[in-house]
Length: 216
Image (cartoon, rainbow, N blue to C red):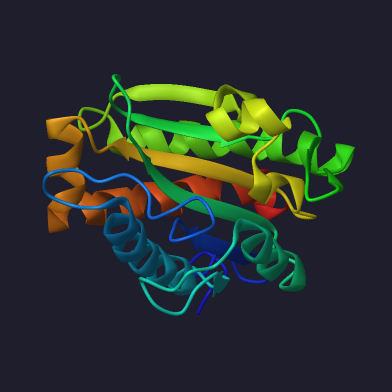
């Protein structure tokens, strides 16, 4: 294939379908659960990224496999991923899609992290990623913006999300939708909605890792 057909050749992406973890099984809508939505979208996104030439690593082998967030970060680190994308769904009074990134070091299990270089790189990639993702999702899901880890409950308590603290590679977390919102729930419960989300995530990875001329 030509370089244009495989724009992510030479890149490694770690996809982290959220939950189950030490934090439980995640959110649940009336039509689909966070665990189910994240797993199905991750598989579709993996296939799209592989078609783009990327090497893709998943943090679990089955939908219901329990993997701690520390272990998930280690998998991305061991793969030397160019980007770790953590896939989650929210339960909130709002609706829509948001992207989180570490904006400072936090502490968990006696470890302080991530490093300044990971923080800075994650911030840059999160903004590129989110803009491209929302272009694809326009009209389907509301844009909740790019936000620091500290805006989450766990991130606010620790200084960063656990998956960020232990990450030695650029990392972001996508709250794909709010499952307590009926419209968002229906979107991810539908095969067409999950396909669109996977395409949006693929677009986000492309935008994050590719600059003018195809370099990073």
